[in-house]
Image (tube, rainbow, N blue to C red):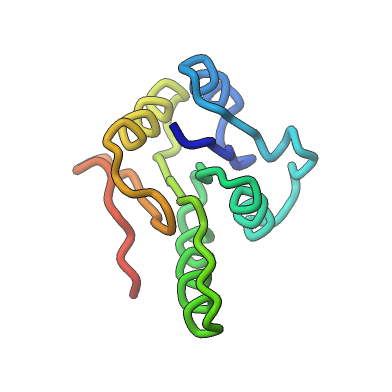
Length: 127
């Protein structure tokens, strides 16, 4: 099971539910990063080797694409452990969404997945 980094816009109860199910969970807020930029959260998750979980779709899609393009352009491909963007729903639904994709054993490294209410998890395609 991969370690998870929970962004500050995800409810504390989601982290509690995931930890209760055996996931190794770190919250950005607990690291003193409560007001940090999303780029800081992604960098910290990558430093720790943890899959980032957030509801902030627009920012993390942009950061993911920038990460992919810049690391390739600079000839220094550095992978991040993955980004999961569940819906902004009640904590039990968010827990189930995250647990479902981890259990699926889909490749997470250097990938971004977004939960769609109609269709479940969808892999982000670069534009």
